[in-house]
Image (cartoon, rainbow, N blue to C red; front, side):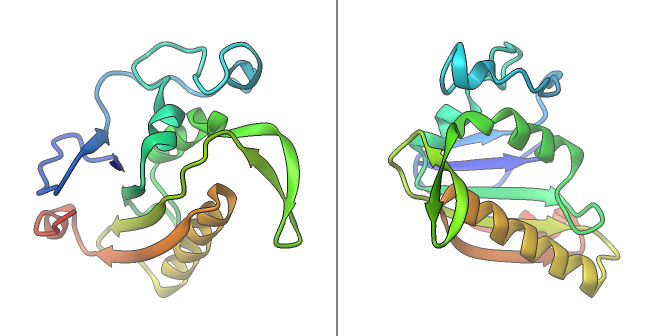
Length: 162
């Protein structure tokens, strides 16, 4: 399954195969750092606002695609909020992987990660920061980084086949 996380409200892309889209539908609440998703309801956020199952969706995907406006070299506030709310994709304890400390995985899936950023005046420095951040996300998720691409507008993205 493809999991598409986007800050575009009226998302209308051509998507091949089974997929789920997470976009701004209703009010997403902020992660409060209670770690209830690790202890009380493992894998599911304790805040029930329609976004509580994001880490479960991540555990079912074989490809995750982030589509975001570029904010100073990183994802938009909505995308960051979704990522924060999906912290239970990993567990609270740690392991060494490739000589680095990482959270243990809750799920057995391995997925590919792509990110498509849009914005009129994205600088080369912001592009490199975005590439580095998405590569870090892939490392933390133990995912394979597929691609990080940049577009001048959200409209340019509409031609992509996902």
